[in-house]
Structures are given as C-alpha cells and as structure tokens.
Length: 270
Image (cartoon, rainbow, N blue to C red):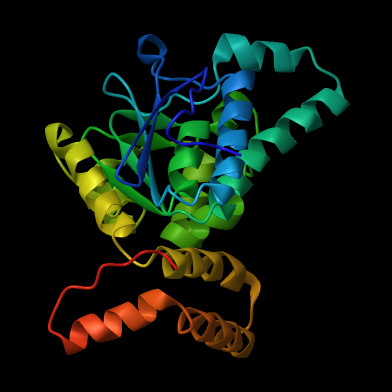
C-alpha cells in the first residue's frame, strides 16, 4: 500500500505535506517528456492513491518553466515505429490506463501548467479535475501532426466535454496550439496566474480541498465520472443515493453542529 510519507518515485519528483501531494515532472532539459517507464510509474501511483487516505488532493506540475512535452521522441516514438501491432496495443492501452487511473483516484487532481503542455502532457492536464495556467502556457493535442489520430488517451471523450465539440474538433484536426487566453475563455483552464504565483495558487486550491469533506469530495468526483453516460433520471437517482450516503458521515454532522455554534467546521473525512 502506498505510503505518501515514504514514497520515492524513480522518474519524477514527489512531495507530501498537510494532505497535499505534489507530482513534478522533472526532465527540464527536454521540457519534461514522458517515457515508457514514467508512464507506467505515474499509472501505478494514481492507482495506489485509491488507498492512500491521508492524501486529500494532488497537484501535477512540471519543472523548469514547462509542464510536459509529451512522449519522448527518441525514447518512445522511435521504438514505436519498430513495433508490431501487439506491442503497439500494449503501449496505447498503458497510456490510456494512466488517464483511467487519474480519473478513478478519489482525490481531486489540479494541473499547474506553465509553458509547453502538448501531446500526452495536454492529456494529463485534460484528465485533471482542475487546471491553473500561466499566460505562457501553450497547449496542443498535436497527434495528427505526427500522423496519428486525435483520439488518444480519451481526448475525443473528455475534451469536448470541457470546451465543446466544435472547439475540440478544431484542436484535434488542426493540431494547433491553444493559447492560455483561449484555454481560459473556452473553459479548459479554470484560472490564469503569473508564473511566480502558479504553485502558490495551485497549493491554495489544494489546501482548501484538503481541508474540506474528503469523503464527500471523492463522491463528487465519482459522480462526475459516472454520470457522463447516464440519462437525467438515472443521474438524479444516482445523486440521491450518493447524497444520502454522505448524510451518514460524521463530517455532515460536524458541519451542522459548527453552523449551529457559528463556528467553522473541521472536517475529518469520515
């Protein structure tokens, strides 16, 4: 079971404080590309977070003024050209499993994006629950520029839900870069801040989430995921059941008693 206090990844940086975990992609000389190994290690980490109750929010960011330049050209794309179909399918399923793991972990995930955020990096930002960027952020789903379809790692399912079908189609067919201003205007980015305020803004949100009712937050994330393919009546019933479960938590009672006493509730996640 993952212990956030002692966890020591091999292919990226990790820190943990006051319920907030920070993942930093750390190959700044190459703008933080992913490799076969870092994909797998990130996937396994997010799977492990399902059972890491002391982790209440996660920040994903990159070192050196960039978020992530996608899959490493020499360490991933070169070998893929030489692979047969079974190996290619193993790889594409593994990368998709990273997105599944990010969506399935109960903790809200915040992407803190500066500079280059392209390919698989754009996917990781997309798969996060909240996104904060700097004006220098350049985001591109550039798969068609390397001869691939835009339907990579869930892009055709998630991106239209964030920015709309037409805008998603524009980015996926043209492979062009989305500016930070466009990203905020279209709803991809929740907020833009200057580079020197990026991590403090992300940590402020993460700390606020970590101080909240964590069981209920996990339920919210679960419902956001599962209601994508539900009809309205089914979704309302699912939410009724989810909310009734949350009403049995001690956090719900704590909030009521704090309100009655005109105090700020202290949530404990149970």
